Length: 276
Image (tube, rainbow, N blue to C red; front, top):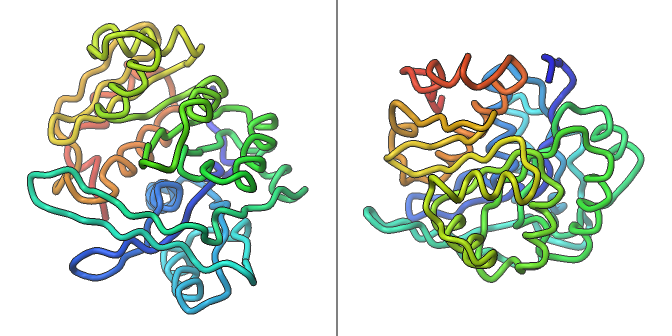
């Protein structure tokens, strides 16, 4: 893939994460878009917010980041998304994802189709596919995307095996964590051992690359029929919300510049994964 200055499209949920210390803008597509923009990579967020106070504040947060929100739709009938996150040190973060909300109803249209058709990448996840309306829009967009990046992001009970498998079949690049890898490999009747599971997923779903995130242990990338292991950890405070989104943004920013062997070592050199 050659370097392109056409914006990447990040499709799906934009919302407020409600944390013990307060609320902050979130949603994996939103956070990946924010960090791509901070890296200087052209990006557009395709999402939907409510015509409510939280929606107004979320749009203001996008503006403060300098994010292109021209593909963010406005819903007169559904509220802006909210996720209540339970964060406890030493334990996995758990989530209560409110439903239905505005991003459950992202509409397909010519502007959105043309943006995806002209983009070097479409980034999407499983959470946005939880309801029929946004899922149908995503399925239609996938038919026009040149390079499809699936950020698996399983959030029980907001997914089905059939939908996740379909999204894997459509993907060129997949990012997932160890829990997600174990579940998907169980569906396929295969062991979740990293050394065999990543090449199996790539071969089974015809993927160009699979990235496994491992919290403080870093990440492993399978691409070009070889493994690339991290030489450091994910960003500081790896158990906080959004650290894997930072990593994905860096991976996608580097991906068009050449084979992973050329840039993977630099990716993990401090301060390459700074979150600010």
